[in-house]
Image 1: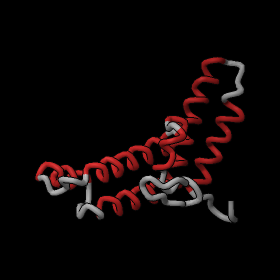
Image 2 (image 1 turned 45 degrees about the vertical axis):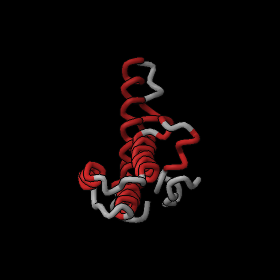
Image 3 (image 1 turned 60 degrees about the horizontal axis):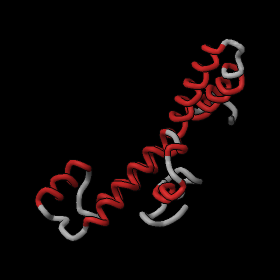
Image 4 (image 1 turned 30 degrees about the vertical axis):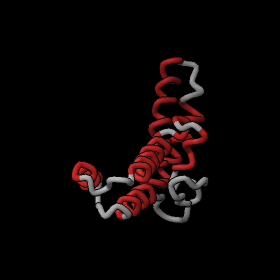
Length: 133
């Protein structure tokens, strides 16, 4: 932490470390369990704060490749047949979005082969669909 007021991310990191190091090691089984749950929530918030903006920006870029701004417009384009013949591209973009969200919530939810879709989670890197990080 730099001098002065800690950032939101620094506060969440400190909370997560406290929960992991102090509360989870409690002899009280219930308190230890609640500490584990709370530490997982703090980890999710930390990942959302650090990776969320990059994930959202990359998803908007992918959608722009179809000429749409959001999922609603994508769904309308699919229904109207505008993306006929581009099914594989649409599926890859949707998989990348879901993998990014799952990776942000809990990276352990992803199979190693699905981690190729992660964006913005490793050193701010943004992988293209089908590209490894």
